[in-house]
Image (cartoon, rainbow, N blue to C red; front, top):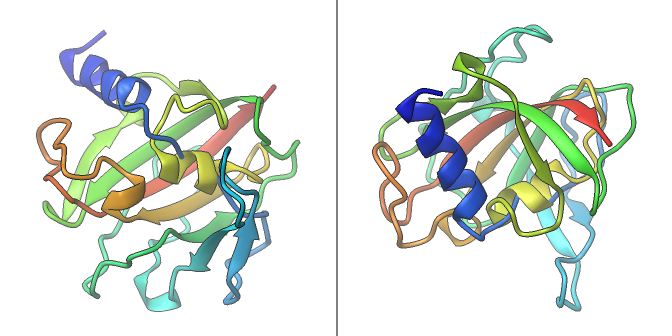
Length: 182
């Protein structure tokens, strides 16, 4: 396993922050989506749609996507857009989810991580194994789907820079492909 891959897995797996979501749709809707509440929260998580002009290209299922960092001001809440709608089972808390992803950051304006260069990443949804933006943003995705997530620092790594390419208080742009939901 390459040192880049070890860093990627360590950052995602040990950050104790988590990624949880919105329901899948054929293309991103322009409405705000209420997701399930994070554990211990009494109010539903709100996920805003990514404005059309800020979305990355859909790409092709089974091929590495190209993440585009928007030129607009970074959002202060989680934003989501389904780029490809899956047809398999929908991910829910407690499920083991296998994904491919790319990560670009507002600070670098480029892709800084990609599981496509090594192997898919697996985690338990809602268990705090990943950043909060993933536990919220991946929930509801169906196997075979591709979703773009724009994650503010409060749901990402916060003031802690986990490594090269990710600044403190950075806004993250992930494109996540769900390969399998168990």
